[in-house]
Image (cartoon, rainbow, N blue to C red):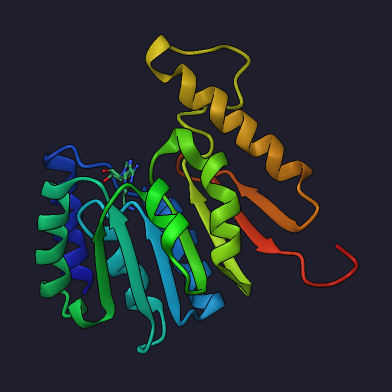
Length: 200
Ligand SMILES: C[S@@+](CC[C@H](N)C(=O)[O-])C[C@H]1O[C@@H](n2cnc3c(N)ncnc32)[C@H](O)[C@@H]1O
């Protein structure tokens, strides 16, 4: 499995497919190992790199539901899931994740949010609703090149994402129904769990 992941990572770098950075992947895989999920939801499949990596450390009976809007990437992802021999554990959905999450009605023990960066705030309440009580939401790229915590706004092109990400992080801080932790690796990670006892 490790060899295949190295190959997929190389392909991603050569073809300019954005995938999770190495140090963030380590934290992601440790988190999956801790939670021992039976069902994972991934927003942002790309070419299956993080999906295959998560399944490699999850229990054998864990399934992955993964969504992406990009047909070409999903074609490559399907091939990679096959090569990793995990196709029978994976449900690939080609859809706008913003829409899909309003339709799903099963619970997930682990949700990896790595999709449309400007939409995390609007997506979050739906994801929280889909999360099992002891589950975890793992959000990648919340620092977005370090710009989210900078006073300065970057180029116009990124402005909406930065503004929305700042609003998202503020709403997380203010949300009393969850506990959250930011980890400063990769492009910045946010880990969220439901607050299930009275002391939160
Ligand atoms: C950073 S990549 C995912 C990387 C992958 N999780 C990994 O680490 O291997 C983000 C993906 O989100 C997808 N995406 C962007 N907007 C989307 C949307 N509205 N619905 C579903 N997927 C979306 C992009 O096509 C892209 O493949």
